[in-house]
Every structure is written in C-alpha cells, then in structure tokens.
Length: 421
Image (tube, rainbow, N blue to C red):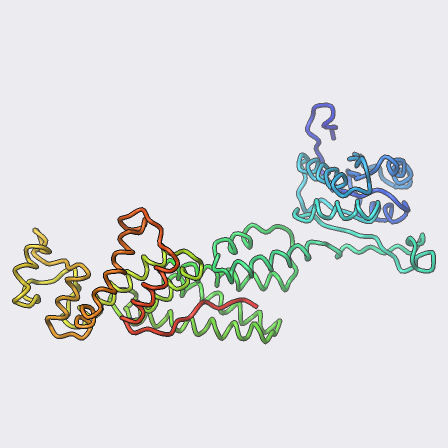
C-alpha cells in the first residue's frame, strides 16, 4: 500500500473501512476487530485524531490508517467535504465496493450525518455499533462490554425509498424513460419490498412508453411481464390502493388489446386507432405539449376519413382505382392525385371526405357542414413548427381543435394511464 501523498496511487488488496472518529474507543475497536480491514480511512477532527492511536494499539492486527480532517466537526459543510474526500480516496484504491464498510458510530452528530450523506449513494456496506446498556441512566454512551453490532442498519434503505418516490412521481407524470433510468442506474442492495416494487414498475413503465410511441405489440409484451410481477407483489404486500391501480391498468390493457385485434396488429384502419390517437393527444395536452398534441389530433381526423373511406370503398385512400371515384369528380381527381407509375390515386384529407360526400356517406356530409371549423384545425396544424410553419400552438387553439375533432369523430369519453399510489 502506497500513500498517494507521495505521488503514488493508493492500493488495497483487502477490506477497507471508512470510520467517523470520536467518542469512546471501545465501539470502534469492536467494529474494526469484527471486520478486519487492511485499511482504515478515519473521518476525524483535529481533536479526535489522537483517539486513533488508542484504537490502533488495542487491535490484534495492524491495518494501515489514513486521515481526512474536518476543520470544524460541528459544521455540516466542512464535515461533508472531508467525508467526500474519504470516498474519493476509496475510489483510487483497487477494492470492490462490496469490500468497503462505512462505520458511522463515532464522531459528532454532524460528522455522522455528513458521512452518511457522503456515502449513501455508494454501494458500500454500513455498520453501526450500539449497545444494550448506556451510562447516565441510559442516556449516555454505550458501556464497555455491552456493545452490539448493527450491520443491517444501512441508510441505503432510506435512499432506496426516496428513489421509489421519485420513480412513482415520474411514472405518474408519464416520464417513463426517466423512471426506467432511475431503476436501471440504482446501486447498492435494495430492500426486498422495493426490489419487488421496481420489478413490476419497470416493465409497466416500458410498456406505457412503447404505447406512447405507438409500438402497441411491444407494449403488450412488456405488460405480460409487468402484470405478472404486479400480481406477485400484491400477494406479498397487499395494498388496497395498489389493487385499484391494478384494476385501472387492466382496463387500459384491455383497450390496448382491442386496438391490436381490431387493426389486425396495426395492419388495417379501424376506429379504435382513432380513439387511441385522441387519447394520446389528450395526454400531450395535459403535459402542455400543444404542438405534439395538435399533430396527433390532425392525424386522428385524417385517420377517421381513412377508416370511413376504406369501409365504404374497400380500398385505402392512398391507393384508389380511378373507377372508385364518382364520375363527376373523376377527371379532376385524376389530374390532381394520380400517380404516374401505378395509375392509382392518393387522396388528401379534403378530397377523401369529398368522395365520401358524393357517395352519400354521412361523415362526408358532416365534414362539409362543419368545413369552417375543420379549416381552423388544418390551419393550426399547418402553421405549427411540426408541420409547415414556425409558430407554436397555443393552449387555447389546441383545446379548441381537440374539441372540434373529438366531437366530429363522435368521441366524448377518454382515459389516462393509471397512477401509482
């Protein structure tokens, strides 16, 4: 082992302890004897440093000791800086994180708190030495010979609980990628309940993320995994609020499956996909992403026309044989919309509804009865930076065109994704 103060990398081929130094030496001696580290990094104050000599002399083995000194053991910032230096020193050693134990028994309360804050995000082991007997009527320090080790007293479980809260908040805000990132980048050993919680939240988050991206089949596959893990969690940890979440999730999943089935795996047009698009647009509205919402609303209007056209004519509106077009429109449509190679017609929005009108379809009739309203939808979409313009869509405009299109296609009930309790 070489001191980095001499210009060398400090290395350790065995266990390392980070230990706050202060108070009675006996609990610290007991902890060191139990862990047998080859190296100890003391978080110390100028006043507590001499205590290390008493501790080291009492040991039956001789670990190498290093010191990180806080200039003031009663100021949190100073103690935290020194504690972080302890962590940085460990990181320069050739030692696995599992071989590092943080003992926060000694030192001032501020030093102890700073050491926990500085190391809680690291995948280390933690230890505390308490006792069944204390002096001063049970209010003082642990009496010699009555020390007790508490290796399970890791603050990591508290940190993990905070991560769980973050994941829940992100999930409920439909920030699924961020929730997945927190779960995937967590470090340290998780408490069993939180580990099981993440086991169902992650695939559900990924499933809803795929759904938001219109990858319905991938979403359904991830839901298989997530639903099984959710049911396992509920068996181990029954919670009425989570039961309600599970019911909401299953309602959403039934809708997803209906979209997949009715569109033959998104190979054919169906009204279920129009409904899915408008639900997606509504979520974008709630998230105040008005340009994204408008793009989806306009697409829902287009798709509604495609659904009606395919049902009436038996062909999609981008591959239309000329004879399908009513006689009074045919010559003009051939000039405007016919592909030179395939000789098939590709109809835009208004032309699609014009064919429907001339063929007596009620959607075509309604489209032109409400033409002025629908023109506003088209104009807002065209002026959007996501289409042909450079203007952002306002909340008022987005709300208006959503109402227009939802009413036109005959949808009045919408749903959101379930929220974790």
